[in-house]
Amino acid sequence: MKKILIKNGTIINGNRENRYIADILLTGDRIEKIGKIDKQADIIIDATGKIVSPGFIDTHSHSDLRVLIDPFIEPKIRQGITTEILGQDGISMAPLPKEYVSSWRKNLAGLDGDSDDLSWDWENTHNYLNLISKTGCGPNQLYLVPHGNIRMEAMGLEARPATKEELEKMKKITRRELEAGAAGVSTGLIYIPCAYSLTEELVEICKVAAEFDRPLVIHQRSEADTMLDSMEEVITIAKESGVKIHFSHFKICGKKNWNMIGDIEKLLDKSKEEGIIISYDQYPYVAGSTMLGVIIPPWAHAGGTDKLVERLGNKKDRIKMKEDIEKGIPGWDNFIDFAGFEGIYVTSVKTKANEDCIGKNLLEIADLRKKDKYDAVFDLLKEEENAVGMYDYYGKDEHVVTFMTREESNICTDGLLGGKPHPRVYGAFPRVIGKFVREMKAMSLEEAIYKMTRKPAETFKIKERGLLKEGYFADIVIFDENTTIDKGTFVDPIQYPEGISHVIVNGKVLINNYIKNEKLPGKVIRILKN
Image (cartoon, rainbow, N blue to C red):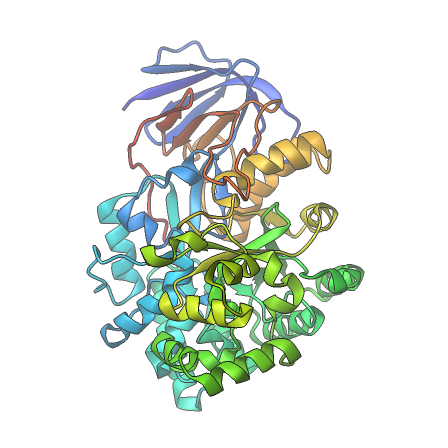
């Protein structure tokens, strides 16, 4: 087995312990020794003056499709990510019954993209993960079984509560997918069909997750006006099912809602006192990113994307959509309300005809098309069959710091990989190091590394990763703490970060002095029941 010797690095081991200078010897895919090492090695890396840390773990990734068609996933590797968690927001690749493939691809396209180069015939998590193993991957991959896929297999895409019989079917599907090694259950309660579920449905599914000691990873119903009520629903799910909670991309949206931050923290503290286990991830930017279709009221999505497109072409339905956006619907996060037409920018489309919309906000698109602002966005979604990505502004850096420095937090990208993406796809983890640690001094580098490595590994039961420890897998990042920073902007997001010179996955060097070595040493990590 090949040996790699990392010499004279400043070790930050992921465990919040003080840094120290040492060598690290890697043999095969493992860390053999940490200390003073004089042995010969096949590769010697001089890390003098640089930080050596465990590889970063991205707990909210949207590489679900990309990993099958471009498995190296360079935007993630370049920022030091050695492990990703797929299956987010309740809608992903599996389970996928054959009869729903066409409509589901359209529903998924705005988040994860689409491809005609795939067979789309894997049907379940076991086969999907086997396909990733067969094609290979740069970073390691874990998968959450998505609530929307579970619901679709059990009852289709109907906009109604589940029956008792359908709930039982959902529980059986959940059990099957967790037995296949899924790391937890995800849901996205602003996405279709998850948005149609009642609290009881999630409680029942989460009883199965709790039995397996796997978390519920949740994009909650509201991150805006009704966020406190939304959090109370999630806490109820935890209490009634026994499941551990992991909130996705935790934040509060909209200037008018910033005064809720204190109450949100109090609710987190109260939950901890009551013994409820809560964690969350967070990207270090003041703008979010998702599919543009979320601006359309939930009723318009009933039946799937084909029905949405049909309604977008109906004059009466358009009038109703406009009324609901302007007046609001109780419990629905209204992106136009908290971000405005001017604060929502298109990042990706499916057809060349609308590529001129990429990088423009919704008002600019209306001007470009010489249309009413509502008609312009409705037409865009209709023409693209809902396959439009966007980003939206929601907060301030000081709010990011408030949530980032809490014990519950770890770092993620939530990166949508298509078109002209949110810059977090290329720079979330380096931005924490450069902006929030070095420039803002919001926390120590040791604390930040803990939130990027050991904390997520513990939350998701990823064994023998997340620490620099003898016998652990050799997932390692080497970087300059004085220069590491993200470079991408919202105008020009496709830029790799500075300062990360080496990235090693399972003992294979993928970035060596900033030069790419396109191996695929990543592993599919299945979390199996004890």
